View 1 (cartoon, one colour):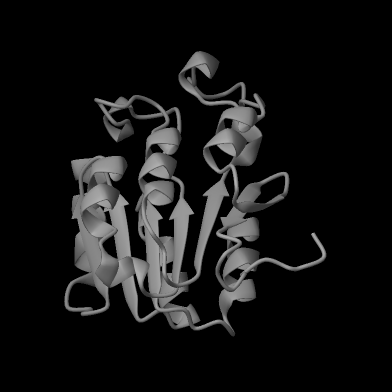
View 2 (cartoon, one colour):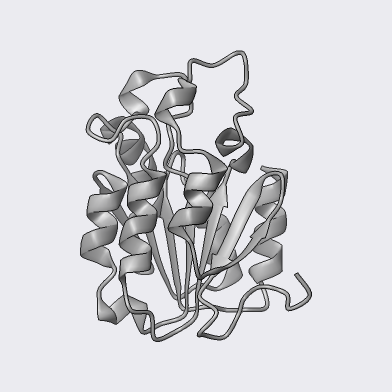
Length: 191
């Protein structure tokens, strides 16, 4: 989670309006996003067991909205002009971890990333948006040997770049960041 914490610390001074993440898991990232000062937070989880485990942690917090469902479907409903007109950070991390099969999207399989990106880029954004994709090494074919992931079920990094054609990209070993160049950029100008 070290790279994740560094990413959030980068956002601390930004105080952006909306945080959206796919893949709630235990909800640790929501806590960090709350610390960053996001005004509205949405977290999407496909696994009922993980959703139910995280829900009590944020019960009563009016800023946090947990959603149960397939991430592309929930994003499609969530990304209305009420969101796309506000400064938004979207953390995409809804892929299967390779352990418990109930944590995988039954319809979309191990990695719904391309469908998530299709929804995001189909919207007209009138405020800055930053898309952050975690675990880029997996899209580069670097799968851990101790988990049951099928390489053919995952898009390649080229597939991801193609989906984000026209967006400004910054890629690290762990994350790929993308923003719409027509809007105020989250990304450093020298990259």
